Length: 403
Image (tube, rainbow, N blue to C red; front, side):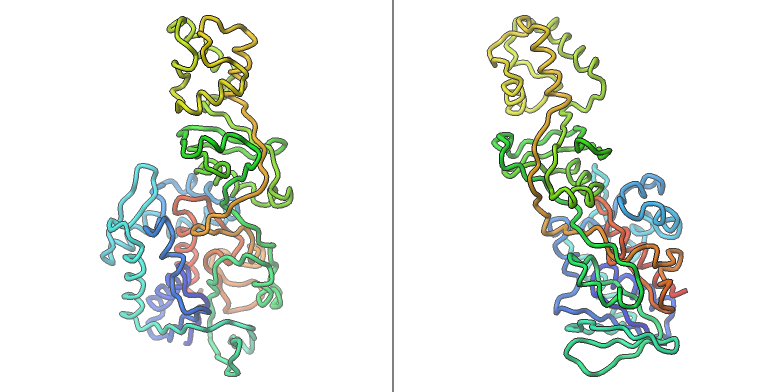
């Protein structure tokens, strides 16, 4: 049996290794279009490679996927985060789980993961060919012929796994669409918000650990740390919002009103009570010198001025109108988003081969027998935190069974 793996990235290598382990007598060939292998693995997580997430609940884990949640929930039972950790550790790559549940190699170097894949491929006798850009797949009598650009030779395989990663444009998936697969138009996911007309950017570098964010006029909500940048806002809370709102925000031309709750408290009355308590505790203190919710000092001063309250005003001089204004800013601050900045290293797309075209229990195409999919080429994507790699490992694990 001859097995072709299209794509020399995370999902490609993982499914190739699985395929060879499951079918030791088969000839397995990885076909990569560029000269570089595992390039996204190399740069991910700032060069450290966020291999997976430490989440142990499958129900919780699947919630991290704006697209693919229900389908992944079923297949995570076969291979999930704990299996990933075990898989790498059995191959001499010890991993460490950080406080934020992100899992990295102990070496803090993505090269450990790359070396592991290269060593395993060599040990198993997997062939690797670079400079192989697929032009066309031709299913014929149960086999699949692959036609490469600039090469007249046709290569024939018994089974093919497509693991080409996310495509930024639909044109990159036409060869799969021609076979009858439904393609969900790709749009960026995981991006930061540009705010060219907002003075909050002067606070660049400030991080607020617990925030609630939302896009006005939609049901999109998120929570977590928020980072103010020199161009707008970033951090897990914003990235999560961008992932779940990828389609909505694309349709709106990346123009939106972002609502920020700086204090992570839902109830207006609770925030008001906190402010009243400060009046009792520190009545003679200037507002600028006694921060509610221990917000970063520069942000606290910025919000007071935004609420049109003098910094030198004392807490016991705060009238009802002032308290309402301050309470509103803390809980319902609003900023204009005008554009996005994509994380170059964490570039993730929403879209790809529709899950309607795939039998997700085997990863086999419903349209072409013996054709399988793994990773981000499918309309599956996760938020930041090792989730996209986990989806690659899980789908690669299942595709590699070639059932």
